[in-house]
Image (tube, rainbow, N blue to C red; front, side):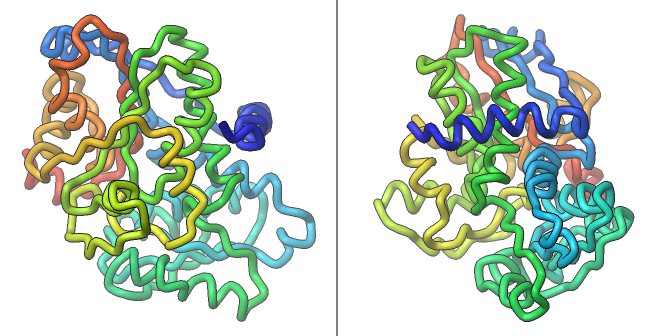
Length: 320
């Protein structure tokens, strides 16, 4: 177990507490009845900036040195991480530049700008923007600080504070379902839960159209799986070879589940019908994964992480 990361998460929990919301852990009577399990929804969809990403971004910005803050930061994002880092930098009075793919959701781009960050479009996908290193290269050229969306221990530690919050509200957790993109979210949550609640099963959830972490762990080596478009744009795209999240995911994730685009859309609609709450595609992935395997969890306490709510209106209209 990664003792350094566990300590980082515990310190991050104290460090960022005043800057983030403690999000609700909602017991879902409807999903519990459908599954015969005891289902709790961790609503990071209700977090500042509409996703969990504010946790890692806030932790990272607080830990920058005075000299690093003067230089400013650069990141690359499909939207949620960019919004989170932009907000954290705005609060701290730090310059922030966010590289986004040219096909990024316009609403997410406008949200990033609303927090005072500069937006620079590059490439046709998140892979072009993040994996091919353009943003990192520009950070070096401009002598600014590069902030990875997931390949950073301080970012991962911030995301891991979700697990600390969940355990404050629910001591007995048989399984937790978490969506996987670059792996930062599940690395933090999985490491903390495996330390504090060893019996808890950590389930990694991915869209079939973009399952690079699953493919890489399954094959035992990094796989470029040529990801397809997915409504789970918050988790879609590749992760960079050599990312620290690969080894952490191998250690802490007990099972991976892949879901179709239709299954994700049905889960988004279910949340509106059953709870009158809007979630984005990446959150729908975790819910769809549980529903796919619900028969295995009868009588068990299950937490499903609904990681964000940032879905374009047009996309939501199409689903409905």
